[in-house]
Length: 437
Image 1 (cartoon, rainbow, N blue to C red):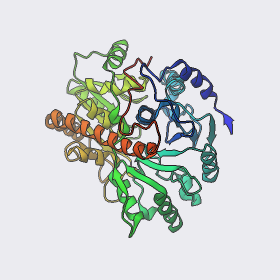
Image 2 (spheres, one colour):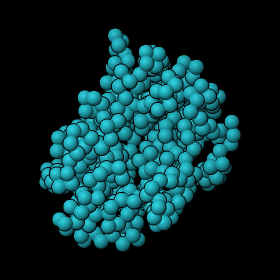
Image 3 (tube, rainbow, N blue to C red):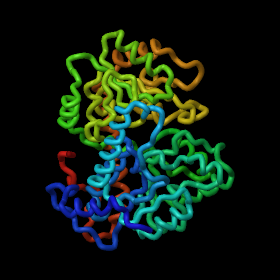
């Protein structure tokens, strides 16, 4: 095991109190150590913010010095080159974006001192055991889904912790994506069933994952419960978003439509044209997008508040949908990849909207049957704008936040039970409103 170079700079930051804020921190028990096992390394605002919020949620209850992200990765992060980089402007923007994410991880994500990158599950579990945590929190994000190499070699992702890891295990807002039981071998299903029994609490983020847990539980009672995404607790700093938009010269006096759609989605360019014809200013959050303005270089903290300034958001992203709702902005969310939906048509995005009673008007399955035209998508977006109930959405966002907090309280209650300094069910504001510069 090696020392992570990012950790060296981070230790200096932590000693200077960048993450601590102004409030005093409960003195941690030397015998208690909590590891959070999730994705954190991608240059992606949703991935970064969910990891950031997971750390915040547990550190505010258990103490900053007790909680860290387990520095395990299935791959090394890096700038991914593809056809959209043929334009020099995109290449320069993406290089700067990659550097920015490296700096943000160093400053804001406390990682374990030892690091491992491997696709080998046995190596990963051995690494995790060696860190000797008292509790391991698995989640959030789609960490339970199988990657192509798991199907190819019959292995199971290490996020499905086995009995060799003696720590108390809690799954928090974990997702298996659109994975279904019949996609797995009998041996893989057996190993997953055994893994579930090892968890004290199983909080899942969406209906497809809950159904998978039910199927794996067979005749046993299913212990899974719904736990919203941790980013529902994130406090958006409007000043950062407004400052960024001002620096980028976005004219907020003109109606704005925000797109975050993949380049593989054929109607994307025509959707932009159709909205321009309707008098909208088109903003793309994806590099190489077909917008009048490209905002792919926003930091995650800036990105979180951008949705507020759109008349409507069109996205295929789970966290793009979350932050549209948090910003109280009409959204039309789409599934454009077949591997993101189950055979029954369920998906993480559709389930999220269903919990807001919005999966009828505000959701579009664009990967089933004939591809919708750009004009049809624009028409659906206009209906979404007209039917958006801001009061109901704001109320539900608060309910999601409360639901997540109750689950974390429950997980921490059991962990602190019997500790003399325990203040189970309460939390300090270790991370007050702060500048993320």
